[in-house]
Amino acid sequence: MKSSAERRTILFLQGPPSDFPCVIADELEARGHRTLRVNLSLSDWLLWHDRRCTAFRGRLKAWPAFVREFLQKNGVTDLVYYQDRFPYHSAALEIARDLGVTTISYENGYLRPDWITVEREGMSVRSLFPEDPVAIREAAKALPEVPMQVRYPHPFWLEAVHEVLFHLVNAFDFVFFPRFKQDKYYHPVFEYLSMIPRLVLAKRRNRHANILIADLIESGAPYFVFPLQLQSDYQLRYNAQYSHLADALEKVIASFVKNAHASARLVVKVHPMDQGIEPWRRILRKLARKYDVKRRVYLVDGGRLVTLLQHTAGALMVNSTTGLHAVRLGCPVKILGIAVYDLPGITCQLPLDLFWREPQAPDTETQNAVQRLMAHAIQVQGNFYTREGKQAAAREIASRIEERRVNEPGACVQPAPRQERARALGIPVSFSEEMEKRTPISRWRRVWRG
Image 1 (cartoon, rainbow, N blue to C red):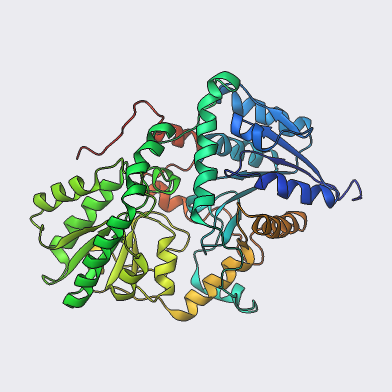
Image 2: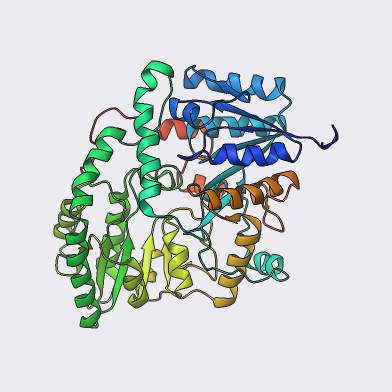
C-alpha cells in the first residue's frame, strides 16, 4: 500500500467506446492509488458502474460547479479524460488547472494503427509538445529508436461495433440521463443508417477508385492529394479555423488554380469512414465549375491512400494524423489548421500559394527525432478494444501517471505553444470560446451550402 504522502486520487471522466478507463483504474488501484469515476451517460454507466462511480444528471451549465465541488471534496490529484474538446472535459480541464489538479488527456494515437496518445491537458491547440525542432532533437538525442511494427492489431469491425453500440445506447439517455449532451455533429441513428449503403457498396467503390488511382499514376502527370477528414471530427470542429471542411477545400482549389503548374492535378480523397452524409461529389463539382478546373480535379472514394501518397508531389490537409504517415513516406505535407506535427523540418512552412511550386520534403533527422520523442513521451502502444491491447496500454499509462512521466522526457512546454497561433486564426482555445462555436444537433442533416 502506498503511503498517504504518495497515494493519489485519480478521477476518470468519459472514455472511448470501451471499458478501457476501468482497466487503467484497476491497474492504478493495484498500485495502491484511489480511483473515481463520474458517469455522464447510459453508455458510461453500462461500461463502468461499481462503487467508485458517481452519476451526473444535471445540465451542462451546472457541470462546472459540480466538477469544482467534486474535485475539492474528494481531494482529487489527477483528472483523466478522453477527447479534450468534449465540452464536459473542456470545462473540467479549466477548473482542474485552476485548482492545481494534474490533467491528462488521451485519444487515438498519432503513430497509428496501434498507438494511443496520452498528453498533459490536451491535443493539437492545447498540446504541450514543443514546437522548436532544435529542442525536439536535443530531447530525443538519447532516446532509443522505436520499433514501428504493429504489436496489438484489432479488426475494423471490432472498433466499429463498439462505436455504434456506444452511441446507439445513448439514444436512450432521455430516460436515464435526460440532460446529457452528446455533442455529436449528426444524430447517431441517422449517421449509422447513412453508412449502410457505403458499406454495401464498398467493394465496388474500391474497385473503381483503384482503377482511377492506377490511371493517374501511369499518366505521369504530377498530382497533389487532399485527404478529407470527417466533418464530425473534433480536430476539424475545434482545432481548425473552418466552419466546414468544404471551406478548406475551396481555399485549396482557389490556390491550386492560381499557382500550380498547368499540368498538375489535384486528387481529393474521401475518408474511408465517411458517413455518406456530406455530398462531396456535388461539392467538388460545384467548386470545380466555379474555378474552371473540372479537368484537373478528381474525387477518389475508396482505394489505398498509401498508394496515392507514394507517388504524389505533395499532400495537403487541415490537421489529420494522416500527415504523419505521409511524412514517414517522405511526402511533402502542407497543414492548413493546427497540428502537433506541423513543425519546421517536418511539414512545409511556406504559404499555401508557394507550396505548389516549392513543396518542402521532410528532413529525415528531424522526422526521426519527432517520432522518437512522441513515442517515449506522449504515445503508448496498445488499443481500446482487445484484451491484450488494453492491458498493455493500461499498464504503461498507469506507470506514467504514477511516476508523473506524461509528456516526459522533454515534451512539456508551458504555456501551450500553439495557442497564440490558434487565436490568430480564430480557433477557440477556452471552454467559453468553444461554446460559441459549438454545433449541437438541431436537424437530421447538416451539409455545406457554399
